[in-house]
Figure 1: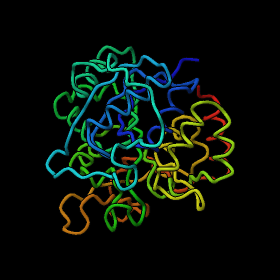
Figure 2: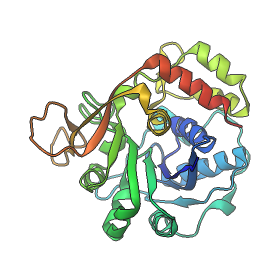
Figure 3: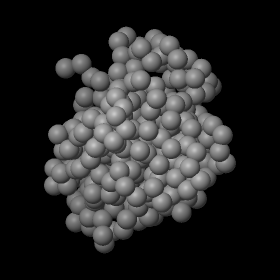
Figure 4: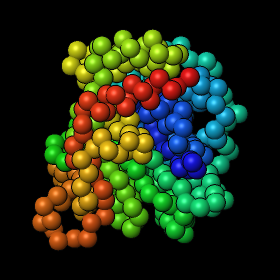
Length: 306
């Protein structure tokens, strides 16, 4: 079976680290490039974190550093959730900086897409700044992109603003460019991530699986996305789950727009599930998740890591 070729754009981040592990050890994904974007913490930290993870897994996948700030807005982060460095709590090996390309994330994406045979999927686990810049500078790449699969947005209330989810709210202008790109887009929003929970008994199993499981559980102790008692929320893993096991989701095709102007609502995802706006559908949105199936899939996926 031919593997699905993927570029991952990410801002590690504890839940990003988990999602990366699952994707990189999947038997059906061929990760061609990993790019970083400022989000959970600043660009230097997220890039360093990615290189630490690649060293930890002894993987030689090209990496490129991306945008250090949103297109037009001030820099904000989620260090209150992920800690100052984004991945404190585990003693990682020194980062393998030889994997870091000299070119920017946008240039690396462009070259990877241009030289790839056939189409490629972009999995976006952070703010969409790099992808928006790619489409603005090199719009011709769109014809070689199979799909954009992203974790972001919310069906209802947000976790950053009243109605806005972090990844979209950090750079709503970039998100608007991506959602208006005309490409196939699949969205794993905040709402399904909030149900994709890892409980204490799951952590106990994960810790004993392999060195990745042990690393993840140690990071979990510093993670503020939920708690060990009430369940840790695996937001970014939902985007990878969509790629690998879409049947665990209830998926609806609908129109999604990004609010960029609202004084109180900038960054909100307008998910038009009832076709109030009479617009053409532009997204496949995961509106619910089978929690038991997710847990089974998640544990099996971790067990395949190094």
